[in-house]
Length: 437
Ligand code: LLP
Image 1: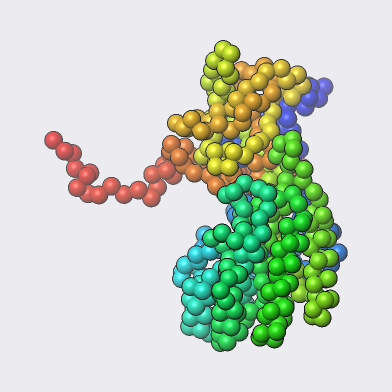
Image 2: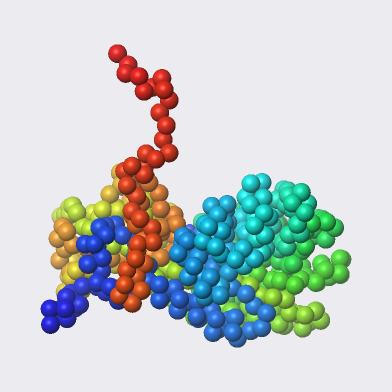
């Protein structure tokens, strides 16, 4: 009976009582639900990998990465997209099969490419000439043949925040489709002794809700593929359509099921190949946010409450922009509840403020909640993507731990940072250690 009434009042997540989690681990706390991640992987299996032949899915690990995540993704038969030596190193340390890794990035360093070549990363998606020439040299000196794709900038703009739109012509990503730049790199790659060109890649942006722009980008790609076939006799074996599938954060967001995107992409690719008389290439997708956002919840403790009569009530929490920079960066919106008052009516409008010394450190404007008190626990929903992975130590706040929940069982997968951790890599020059009179 007591359990029942606790259940009514308390938010549960992944079978766990969130208030018990907050008590056990402290706040702020990132909670990730393993089953939710796995169910996304299964949706990919059912609606894409299992439905269409010669397809591949990789998880864009920039959304949320640690060794545990690598293990979950590997066990579901999904590959990994990495964009840095750090992400690659994490995957290697987790024992992730490197052949199932795709390496992205617009300015990969010599060291990063060397690491990728040394560990036989499956594909390198080459973004520019500088990288192309460097990769050929590295591959040659390692006596390895590296399989590559070219990322192109298709000149297609989706409707999303400017900072997360990438497919437009004016973009730092991809090879511009202008002045023979693509011809130059394709010709180079086809001649390069230690590179094997597999095909092309585009990524249009993030938090996208329409499949039309994927079709438009494929139209651009079709022209280019025809051109490459005529000029060089080159036929793409692979085509990577990126990620970007949008999720629900707040009312107004209208996410579509994965198949809304993938069916359309597959149909278009089939049509293109039929018209060109070429075999259908392997089609690859690389969702990040869509895989993990809904699996994440962040718990905070409410501290100071400040009512400015006739203006607003600021309710401050023990985290903020260091653990979730998205509202400050992209004006991102979130939904939240008072996790210990789930049974009460929402009668009060509050603004959730972070604890940083920044006016812009507001997590949620105008949130309806039951009457709040200091000590209540706030749960912010759908924080699984680009929160933990973008966290900082601004104001010297230690980063929160990550707890993985799975059908009522909880495990720490990243420990809470300590004040000692904050000083861990510091060194004070000798002359400053002496006491100055
Ligand atoms: N592939 C490439 C090459 C990418 O650059 C990205 C994301 C993805 C796949 C995955 O996109 P997704 O499925 O997650 O939308 N920090 C921003 C999002 C930046 C996305 C960067 N690239 C945010 O918090 O909204």
